[in-house]
Image (cartoon, rainbow, N blue to C red; front, side, top):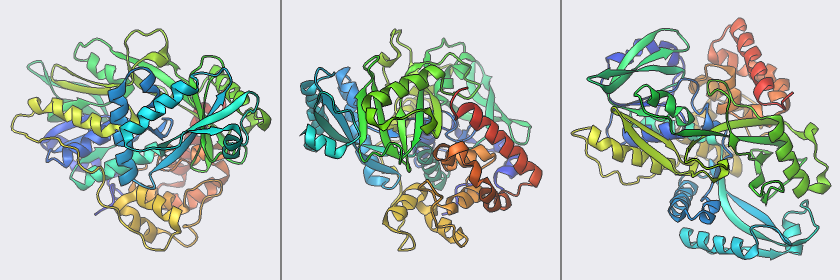
Amino acid sequence: MNAPWQAGWRSSLPALALAEREWDLLIIGGGITGAGILLEASRRGLKALLVEQRDFAWGTSSRSSKLVHGGLRYLKEGRLGLTRESVRERDALLREAGGLVESQSFAFGDYVGGKPGRKMFLLGLAIYDLLSGKRERHYVDSTEFLMMVPNVGRIDLAGGMCYTDAKTDDARLVLRVLQEAQSHGGVAVNYLAAQSLLRSAGKVTGARLHDAVGGGECDVSARLVINATGAWADGLRGQTGATPKIRPLRGSHLVLPAWRLPLAQAVSLMHPADARPVFAFPWEGVTLVGTTDVDHAASLNTEAAITRAEVDYLMLALETQFPQQGLNEADILATYAGVRPVIDSGQADPSKEGRDHAVWVDAGLLTVTGGKLTTFRVIALDALKHAKPLLPGWHDQLKPLPIFADRVRLGMRLRGAQRQRIEGRYGATAPALLAAAAPGELELIPGTQTLWAELRWAARCEAVLRLEDLLLRRTRLGLQLRGGGVEHLARIRAICQPELAWTDAQWETSQAAYLALWNANYSLPT
């Protein structure tokens, strides 16, 4: 199979004459929901085009909490169906995407007088086991708990609860799904914005697209337009006269060096200020801490960033759970914030809003939004179920299929964990990635689990148009390294500038833009 985006492919976009092709679906939005729909539609014979106004996974799908989880907290809210659905999809991803989706054990301290209390927590875990068809030992005494998590607070510690969920690199998951969709004939284009909807007889029939790279516009028609823009969904729906339904909620995170907060388990706790769940867990060679859940009042047209109040909130959680670590803001490598597309039900407390997805049809525009990263396949199939009556002549039972094709095995050129990681992230293109590596590029970039070769491959074959695409989404170096990886930029340039065919002026302009973005949105607020 060819690489998902051949070198030079994006720069030749006008020659592709997208406007002249016949499309069954025009999918607007390049996050995990849009990618999932593109995959499920393409493998079922539909001619589908996905467009994204920024970069793939630019919005919520690169700024999530990185957890592929069954929604344990939804049990407390009585959402048994959502939890069952999430558990099944989590287990499917663990089976089919090893190295990209990995098990993660969680530990929750049982403190005297703490909430939700041992009995309630263990009841939830018993239901969790029942839904997943597994049985685990969930309670340990304080001595064993401290052996598992030696740096937690010890005062009033009676023991602890343990369970297993999963984690992923959310942006790489989106890229892997898009790659799979491309293998079935799907087309995905980044930096191509839907400026306005096209209509005929009052019905949406396409969109006017603006090329943010080359400038220029074209009108693309399709039998059905799907709005998969997440937190931005009301913008397109508003063009049909529909009333707003989205409540944008911001979730912010801290990134710390693994040596400063070393964890083998993910540690979950109830925040001392409001009893919301907060966690810290090992991810990609660093430790992630999150998340907040607050109304996002800023414009969705600007990139989200953590606020001073959110930093203080997360630091208080760390000080409470890990008092002996002496953590302070100087330990923070990076921050990031994402905006969740939550359906507004009028709850006063943002955290009490439901996390189910929703599908609406307005003047022929099908909108799908909300939901969880874990259940992207379920969401995609539900969107296509609603699409069937709008696509006369197309018939499919829409039964779940394996998410990814059979795994490609790399042999012994990489060690076990590294080999599994590359196989999981790159699928059928993994052998070509290794073949493209120059001497020394199969070594890890210090402080990360990323190979230098991944930078070359992304620059050559993964539609990188700006340095931020490379360092914040194709790889996560901008989150894992202090200063956004500034000390490695010379070597990154030596590897990637020839692959991107950028002039010195283009590189320097993109580098300056990346560093300005990092300082404004991924560092501590000034």
